[in-house]
Figure 1: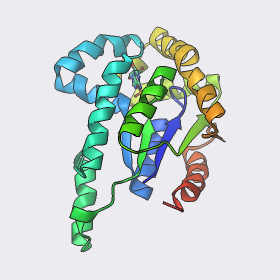
Figure 2: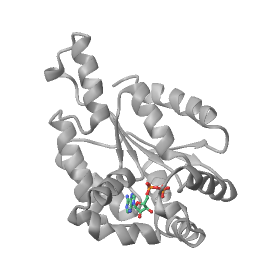
Figure 3: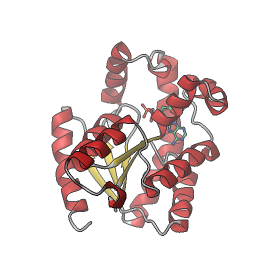
Figure 4: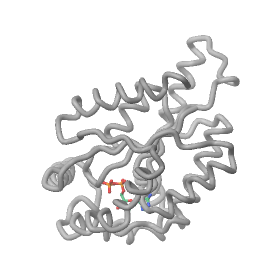
Length: 220
Ligand code: ADP
């Protein structure tokens, strides 16, 4: 089992690339943004607490995010399907005659987390409690003009409230610079950081990521 963080600014393509990698390499894709949006959509009490924060483009509190991550890690280690897609893969494994009861715990790709240095430290703590560790942090580098262009493009096709307002987009990028960018330095010091150029087409970035992942997962 390997644990990999996909790091990037809003609009860098983390979500798109993490989903492609999860499918190709059979990884568990943990997106805190998706988990939070699901809570909002379901109208849970947690969802009601974070709705306004997300709409303003602020970061949600570290404790809330950690509780979601902790729950997902427990489910992964217990071998529970986390969502419909995971269940679909499980069914396919049964059809292929694999013993799903003994399937190995899938490697994890984190998308949108950790987003503060404190979250990075908290991740180390929850990992150490479970005898797990982080294997790599892959940063998808994209310049600011391209990030803004992509978020506008995504606004036209998604119904994400935080993509549809210029002030909110600017604020998300400020939050990123101020709170998330220091996470890069944190991982650079620990020697886990690898950076790739994410300024091109989806397929170009994907090719770079796939060869990195093949390398990382080789001695799994
Ligand atoms: P993007 O990368 O485009 O900002 P995400 O789906 O990762 O999209 O995040 C959307 C919003 O969800 C963020 O602006 C923030 O409010 C909240 N969020 C997601 N992940 C985290 C996190 N790890 N910590 C705090 N807030 C988060």
